[in-house]
Length: 163
Image (cartoon, rainbow, N blue to C red; front, side, top):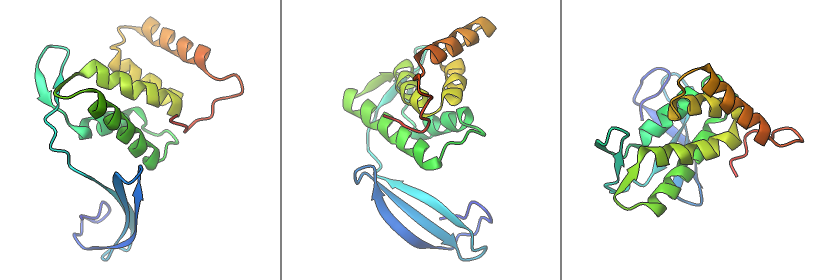
Protein backbone atom coordinates (compact mmCIF):
# COMPACT_ATOMS: atom_id res chain seq x y z
CA UNK A 1 0.00 0.00 0.00
CA UNK A 2 1.44 3.38 -1.00
CA UNK A 3 1.85 5.84 1.89
CA UNK A 4 -0.40 8.90 1.38
CA UNK A 5 2.23 11.11 3.08
CA UNK A 6 5.57 10.16 1.49
CA UNK A 7 4.44 7.79 -1.33
CA UNK A 8 6.71 4.99 -0.11
CA UNK A 9 5.46 1.53 -0.93
CA UNK A 10 6.49 -0.12 2.34
CA UNK A 11 4.26 -0.29 5.39
CA UNK A 12 3.23 -2.60 8.18
CA UNK A 13 -0.25 -3.42 9.42
CA UNK A 14 -0.71 -2.39 13.05
CA UNK A 15 -4.34 -3.37 13.53
CA UNK A 16 -7.04 -5.12 11.49
CA UNK A 17 -10.68 -5.45 12.33
CA UNK A 18 -13.94 -6.21 10.61
CA UNK A 19 -16.42 -3.37 10.31
CA UNK A 20 -19.84 -2.88 8.76
CA UNK A 21 -21.07 -6.25 10.00
CA UNK A 22 -18.06 -8.08 8.55
CA UNK A 23 -18.35 -6.71 5.01
CA UNK A 24 -15.31 -4.43 5.33
CA UNK A 25 -11.86 -4.88 6.83
CA UNK A 26 -10.36 -1.76 8.42
CA UNK A 27 -6.56 -1.76 8.66
CA UNK A 28 -4.35 0.71 10.53
CA UNK A 29 -0.99 0.90 8.81
CA UNK A 30 2.33 2.54 9.59
CA UNK A 31 4.75 3.63 6.89
CA UNK A 32 8.19 2.14 7.50
CA UNK A 33 9.84 5.14 5.82
CA UNK A 34 8.16 8.19 7.43
CA UNK A 35 6.51 6.40 10.42
CA UNK A 36 3.15 8.10 9.82
CA UNK A 37 -0.04 6.10 10.28
CA UNK A 38 -3.00 5.81 7.96
CA UNK A 39 -6.16 3.74 7.60
CA UNK A 40 -7.25 1.60 4.67
CA UNK A 41 -10.46 -0.29 4.04
CA UNK A 42 -10.87 -3.51 2.10
CA UNK A 43 -14.15 -4.35 0.40
CA UNK A 44 -15.12 -7.42 -1.51
CA UNK A 45 -15.04 -6.39 -5.12
CA UNK A 46 -18.44 -7.29 -6.36
CA UNK A 47 -18.41 -8.42 -9.92
CA UNK A 48 -21.64 -6.51 -10.34
CA UNK A 49 -22.35 -4.98 -13.69
CA UNK A 50 -24.71 -2.33 -12.38
CA UNK A 51 -25.16 0.42 -14.94
CA UNK A 52 -25.96 3.98 -13.93
CA UNK A 53 -28.44 5.75 -16.20
CA UNK A 54 -27.42 9.40 -16.31
CA UNK A 55 -29.83 12.31 -16.76
CA UNK A 56 -28.96 12.55 -20.45
CA UNK A 57 -29.88 8.87 -20.94
CA UNK A 58 -26.30 7.61 -21.28
CA UNK A 59 -25.18 4.59 -19.30
CA UNK A 60 -21.93 4.23 -17.37
CA UNK A 61 -20.68 1.47 -15.07
CA UNK A 62 -21.36 1.99 -11.37
CA UNK A 63 -18.28 3.45 -9.65
CA UNK A 64 -18.06 3.64 -5.86
CA UNK A 65 -15.25 6.20 -6.13
CA UNK A 66 -17.59 8.74 -7.72
CA UNK A 67 -19.79 8.61 -4.61
CA UNK A 68 -16.75 8.99 -2.35
CA UNK A 69 -15.43 11.94 -4.38
CA UNK A 70 -18.81 13.70 -4.33
CA UNK A 71 -19.08 13.24 -0.58
CA UNK A 72 -15.55 14.51 -0.03
CA UNK A 73 -16.42 17.70 -1.92
CA UNK A 74 -19.67 18.17 0.01
CA UNK A 75 -17.93 17.51 3.34
CA UNK A 76 -14.85 19.63 2.68
CA UNK A 77 -13.75 21.31 5.93
CA UNK A 78 -16.68 19.85 7.86
CA UNK A 79 -16.14 17.99 11.17
CA UNK A 80 -16.99 14.58 9.76
CA UNK A 81 -14.89 11.50 10.49
CA UNK A 82 -13.63 9.52 7.52
CA UNK A 83 -15.15 6.43 9.12
CA UNK A 84 -18.58 8.08 9.10
CA UNK A 85 -18.29 8.78 5.37
CA UNK A 86 -17.12 5.24 4.73
CA UNK A 87 -20.10 3.91 6.67
CA UNK A 88 -22.44 6.17 4.71
CA UNK A 89 -21.09 4.90 1.38
CA UNK A 90 -21.37 1.29 2.59
CA UNK A 91 -25.03 1.79 3.55
CA UNK A 92 -25.80 3.50 0.24
CA UNK A 93 -24.20 0.64 -1.70
CA UNK A 94 -25.96 -2.00 0.36
CA UNK A 95 -29.28 -0.28 -0.30
CA UNK A 96 -28.66 0.13 -4.03
CA UNK A 97 -27.37 -3.40 -4.66
CA UNK A 98 -30.29 -4.81 -2.68
CA UNK A 99 -32.91 -2.88 -4.67
CA UNK A 100 -31.45 -2.88 -8.20
CA UNK A 101 -30.06 -5.64 -10.39
CA UNK A 102 -28.81 -4.17 -13.64
CA UNK A 103 -29.62 -0.47 -14.01
CA UNK A 104 -30.15 2.43 -11.66
CA UNK A 105 -30.96 6.08 -12.31
CA UNK A 106 -28.33 8.51 -11.10
CA UNK A 107 -31.16 10.37 -9.33
CA UNK A 108 -31.79 7.28 -7.21
CA UNK A 109 -28.15 7.20 -6.12
CA UNK A 110 -28.27 10.91 -5.29
CA UNK A 111 -31.49 10.47 -3.30
CA UNK A 112 -30.01 7.61 -1.28
CA UNK A 113 -26.90 9.67 -0.48
CA UNK A 114 -28.90 12.80 0.34
CA UNK A 115 -31.16 11.03 2.85
CA UNK A 116 -28.19 9.77 4.83
CA UNK A 117 -26.07 12.89 4.47
CA UNK A 118 -28.88 15.08 5.79
CA UNK A 119 -28.72 13.12 9.06
CA UNK A 120 -24.94 13.25 9.17
CA UNK A 121 -24.27 16.96 8.52
CA UNK A 122 -26.77 19.58 7.38
CA UNK A 123 -24.21 21.90 5.77
CA UNK A 124 -22.67 19.05 3.78
CA UNK A 125 -26.19 18.00 2.80
CA UNK A 126 -27.03 21.46 1.40
CA UNK A 127 -23.74 21.49 -0.52
CA UNK A 128 -24.52 18.06 -1.95
CA UNK A 129 -28.14 19.01 -2.70
CA UNK A 130 -27.03 22.10 -4.63
CA UNK A 131 -25.37 19.81 -7.17
CA UNK A 132 -27.74 16.83 -6.97
CA UNK A 133 -30.88 18.98 -7.30
CA UNK A 134 -29.20 21.35 -9.77
CA UNK A 135 -30.05 24.61 -8.05
CA UNK A 136 -30.65 27.31 -10.66
CA UNK A 137 -30.39 30.34 -8.40
CA UNK A 138 -30.17 31.59 -4.84
CA UNK A 139 -33.91 31.07 -4.28
CA UNK A 140 -33.49 27.31 -4.84
CA UNK A 141 -30.64 27.32 -2.34
CA UNK A 142 -32.66 29.26 0.25
CA UNK A 143 -35.68 26.98 -0.21
CA UNK A 144 -33.52 23.96 0.54
CA UNK A 145 -31.97 25.61 3.61
CA UNK A 146 -35.46 26.47 4.90
CA UNK A 147 -36.56 22.87 4.42
CA UNK A 148 -33.53 21.63 6.35
CA UNK A 149 -34.23 24.09 9.15
CA UNK A 150 -37.90 23.10 9.26
CA UNK A 151 -37.08 19.39 9.54
CA UNK A 152 -34.24 19.80 12.05
CA UNK A 153 -34.87 18.29 15.50
CA UNK A 154 -36.03 20.81 18.09
CA UNK A 155 -33.54 19.71 20.75
CA UNK A 156 -30.58 20.59 18.57
CA UNK A 157 -29.19 18.43 15.82
CA UNK A 158 -27.23 15.40 16.82
CA UNK A 159 -24.73 15.55 14.02
CA UNK A 160 -22.88 12.45 12.95
CA UNK A 161 -25.78 10.02 13.28
CA UNK A 162 -26.57 8.17 10.06
CA UNK A 163 -29.68 6.36 11.24
